[in-house]
Amino acid sequence: SLLYNNNRDLLFHKIVTDEQIELLEIQQTLKIRTDKDFNNLTVSETLYKLMELSIDTNESNNKLEQEIQKIIKKFKVSEKMYYNLRVQCYANKNQWGLLHKLANERKSPIGYKPFAQACIRQHQPPSEIEKYIEKITSTEDKFELYVEITLWRKAFDVAYKMKDPNRMQEVQRLCKDPALERQIHEALSRL
Image (cartoon, rainbow, N blue to C red; front, side, top):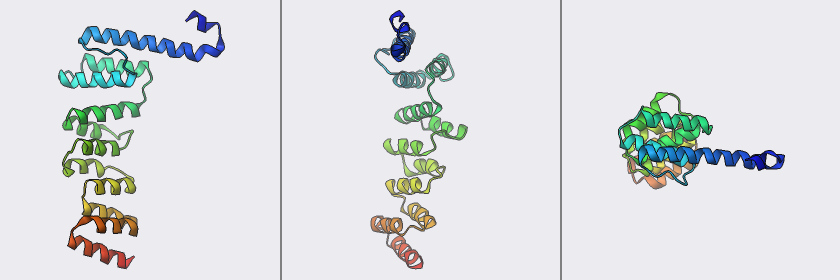
């Protein structure tokens, strides 16, 4: 570290090295406390592993949560990164109650598309996924997600609100529902 102090060009390298040393020290402490290996993990991976351990040990709002908050503060982890990690962790651990709680705590800084996508990746029923799609403000995103989970009526409704004939035709082509196909045909003739 003294070598870096004497050269302004190496300041960035000094900062990165110091942060890596701090992370390694934290990971070593965590290994002792949890009896789990944290070596060679990034800050994000370390946080994710702590989140998993918190769920696995039923110790939410405890010392592991305090460690998570300490790392977030120390390494200036953005709120968006934190939310993305929580969404991934809860979905991968099938913690749908916690995911729902996170989505409803306050306005999500990452929006609600990542919540819906996490449910889709984990093969949740459309009724579960739809809870998050309804919160999405982007009609384009809503349409894409409804198509992905084959909720054709909802996809058509969004396309109709957008007055987008191409999207309506896409639903008509994919839906395999004669009644909906007729409704789409009528809507297209009125545009």
